[in-house]
Image 1 (cartoon, rainbow, N blue to C red):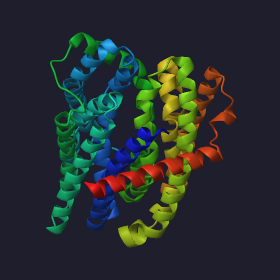
Image 2 (cartoon, one colour; image 1 turned 60 degrees about the vertical axis):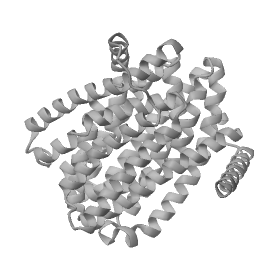
Image 3 (cartoon, rainbow, N blue to C red; image 1 turned 60 degrees about the horizontal axis):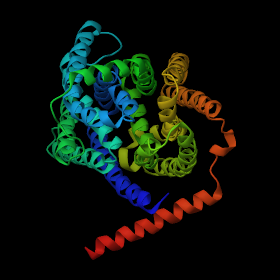
Image 4 (cartoon, helix red, strand yellow; image 1 turned 180 degrees about the horizontal axis):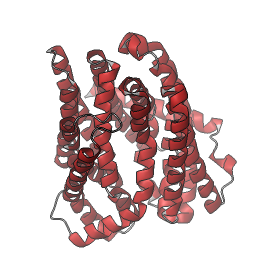
Length: 436
């Protein structure tokens, strides 16, 4: 990694680390204030809102990525991002509430008012999704990271205040979660991460239509990551959901370094045609594999040591669940360069089919394993499904590029180079900060 890349990596990962630290504090406050059953109810409501967002955002962010290669469209894609996101999100929220009313009383769903509080976040969340993607494509990862950091800080401060005054309930936690997207969107616009201008309807229609061709895969990927919450809630109840979703949150902490690396290297893939993009993808995958291995070991050890003293004995089972979840979570993150390559140079089916196949595997295994092993069965099913989708995508990449599989394995020299570069840059940033 070049020095400038290492510097950007350290700065962005610092913002992500701060965001995750705020998230950890918030999760501790919630776990200490709410028993697993109540935490499970809160998380089902939040998952309902995020599912509405995922099903309703039409994969326009993927269309933005696909269209970004045409430099003439870039200013218009940026101008469209926020207003289009708010409009698409509002429609998705209304449809979600209609579905909630129709299915009320099935699958242990929370009440309509709680679901409405969660769905209030949907328009804002879609706006943040589109705007953040544009910021990353513009090589403004720092602004995107700052928006997430400030939103997390505000959310955390609100929860700490509510906890200190004894006002934490399932409703207040969901309301604070929804409101945090307002902060994120304001920071993205205010710092110049994305501009807002009069939308161009022609390009908006093009982006929506192009996104829809990819949306089946995007939807399947999201359901792969979150449908287990609904299945576990229906088959094992809110208590199991409360413990399992804490494990999911902790497992996803392991992604921070890998996700930041993927963000800052994404624009470089667009600097090359298909032939030039292949070595970029191969090198990024190798480096991300190194980061994944280190992150997995750190996460599993830390969670095993800290789960009881930090979250309490009621959540102790989450340590074992985290161990089951971490490998699949990290592989999904490490495979992002391959997914981007397939999105650019192959048909939409290369992204859609693996996700739908893995969703079928996940659903079948959950129905089979949850009645027997509860949350542990849910974690095993999720990891097997994650391995399935990335295994298929890696196979498609290797066949299309002609790269032998062993070239994706990191070398000792790369591990030493990455470590040395990051240590040197971290020391430089420390000295610079003291001098200022």
